Length: 149
Image (tube, rainbow, N blue to C red; front, side, top):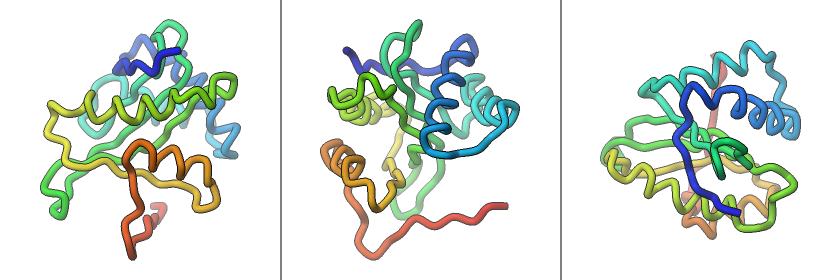
C-alpha cells in the first residue's frame, strides 16, 4: 500500500470528511457535521492558512494529514503544524504513516517551509516512536500550550 500524498481539492470533501469523522470518533473529539465541514472545506478550496493531503489513492484514501501554516522568527520563516494525522485502523502498522510523514516535507519543499511541528499525547508511546522515526524530536524545556477563544 502506498503513502502517496495528494493535495486535497473540493472534489475530495466527502471522502475527507468521512476520514475526519472516523478520526474524531476514535479520539473522542466532539464536533457537529456542520462544524467539521466548516473546518475542512476551506482547506480544500485553497485558503493560505493550511492544507489537507489525502494519503493513498485519491479515489479511496486510507488516511489524511492536515497542516496549518504560521510564521516563526526562531525558525527563520514559514513553519507548519501537523494538526491531524489519521490512518484507517485496518492498514495501520504497515509503515504508511511513517512514509507520509517523510513525504510531507518533500511535498512542501518548494514553498520555503522552515520547520514542521506536531503535538503528541505524552502517554502515546507508539505515536512518539512513529514521529521520532520520521525525524521529529521533542524540544528541551518546551511544551505546546493552547487557549480556546
